[in-house]
Length: 50
Image (cartoon, rainbow, N blue to C red; front, side):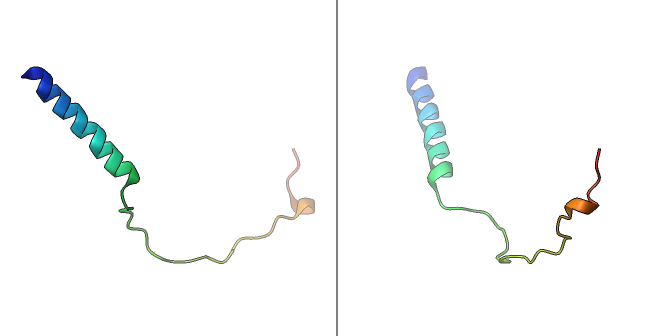
C-alpha cells in the first residue's frame, strides 16, 4: 500500500514537471516590440582611464 502511494506521488511529481517544462508558455509579458536606443554612444576619447 505504501509503495503504490509513493510510486503514484513520484509519477505525479515527474509528470507535472514534464508538463511545466514542455507545456505552452504562461508568461504575461506585454507585446511591446523593439525599443529604440536612447543612450549615448561609446566615445573612447571621453572614457575614463584608470
